Image (tube, one colour):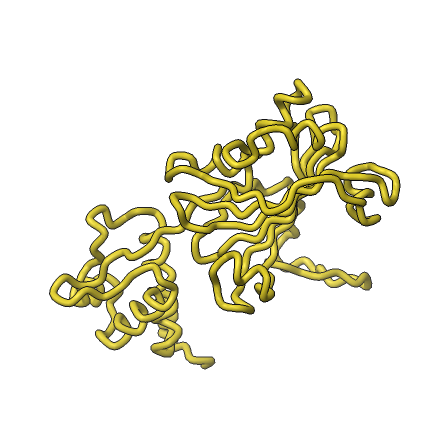
Length: 272
């Protein structure tokens, strides 16, 4: 029966291991913590969670341990489980600089570690529409919110835009704002990719995390509203302090009728 007890006329009852159920509860608690559901920063007690999820005390405790291991909550004697940390929200469907995105959460500061002209590797030059080995402006910044280190940003700029930016206040101003001010044009769109990477020794030291910790790596190529590429960034975020979100719209697709044989001779990958 594959773990299901089936009675005619009733939905199947799923038998789950405690670890699986604890993970499911932890996902719900994590989402509630990150969305600010606990306004007093105190989670419901174990008895309330047992009733809410219709489960056992050991399962609830295992779920709380999972959320606690992520640093989102901690246990306070005599008080219960409270929210210990919040992740900063970062939208993936709007083209905004970090200060524009997180300014409401506290002051955004930038430690400029490197800034100047460099020779573009061929792949960087191609992204920016420049000849191979062309000069580019390279800027490396360590970025913090309310004094908490958040990201290491490596930025490559076309020289006609990047060189004037070098004379600006990079410690307190988003590069996006500077690009628009210098060019007199609005930014239009960006191509992005997001993946998990391990922190090397250098990044781990700067971001104050253990070596080989998982970081969120955002690659973003930004264009002006006329389509010209101007800014290529490789941003390593501390995953424990950042939450990515966006809005997805399903395109128009052809859904096969039930029972239709969809097998083909072509090599295609199916994804749910």
